[in-house]
Amino acid sequence: MAGQCCPGKPVAKRIRVGGQDVGIAELDAILRKAFEMKGVSDEGLKKVLLRELRIHNYVPPLAEKEYLKGLWDAFMRYREQHKAVEEDYHGIPREEIPWFPSINYELCSNCGKCCEFCHRGVYIFDDGPKVAKPSRCIVSCTGCMALCPDKAISFPSLVELREALRVLRAKYALKKQ
Image (cartoon, rainbow, N blue to C red; front, side, top):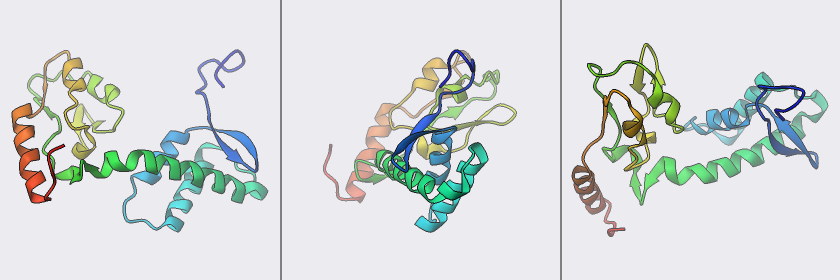
């Protein structure tokens, strides 16, 4: 843990390895990387998880299977928590919902506050902020827009969102939530 002996060092999150709690550096990043890989088999995901674990942590060779078991359990919990948010919105595939930020680059000063704010990874910063993964934006969230000091971020209106959801609910034969 960050504290008296290691100021500035990030707090390691823990997984169960061989019946003991073990701190894992960059656990969220490791789980997120595997989660973002679409169409990969469980065996392929396990290889990715183990590779990423080794990049950020020492894994004793004799305990590798136990580490992978603990990491896989953590990944299954992570996947379950994030699955509904990632894949659909009330039964509608998320990528079909036209809700994501737009950046007016004439107003944008490249401060990057939107990138820092968004924990969903909608933005990347590449010579300025860019919307990289629009379908990861939480439907009806406008937090980055409110935070932008340049007022360079916009979203569709809520009227447009409601109309799009109405059309999509009809398309998928869903009742209004």
